[in-house]
Image (cartoon, rainbow, N blue to C red; front, side, top):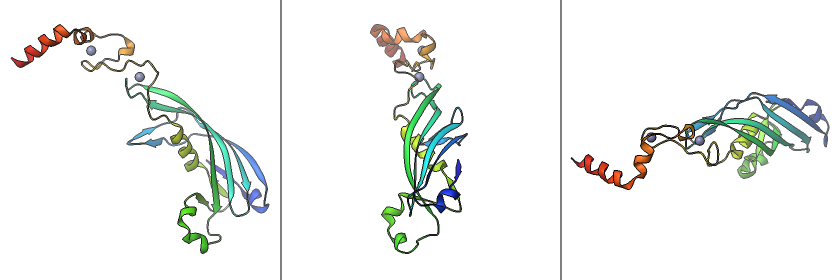
Length: 175
Ligand SMILES: [Zn+2]
Ligand SMILES: [Zn+2]
């Protein structure tokens, strides 16, 4: 997801708007990955702020997530603003390089091309919910037979709910 800032670079205070639609690689979530269902849409304004380039925009995407209850795949819509600073690599080295704390906030780019991929993927990752369920009332899987209870009840469900039968089942297990 690259933009050419060649013309903005030459003129301080200049800014330009870009619209991009591109398929991006899956985002990584704690030990898991989530793919995009369709190309990611980004609207962004890049401004030449002298030392840095200010990148402000909004990402809209459809992300395929796995429901934590029923394990089915579902689509989650992301519509998230983002803001990032980019800096031309190889310029004003020395004093800045020692200032580690601030350097980390700025991304580097070379030539006239700013690659927004990392920034966009980060914004998407932050926008994803911690608790991932396909819908509020998802019934999940039966702990006994593994059936997806959203598709209908299974036979073992009633047995498990009947305390008298549960006692019998326990007795039988001991024999
Ligand atoms: Zn579910
Ligand atoms: Zn069952």
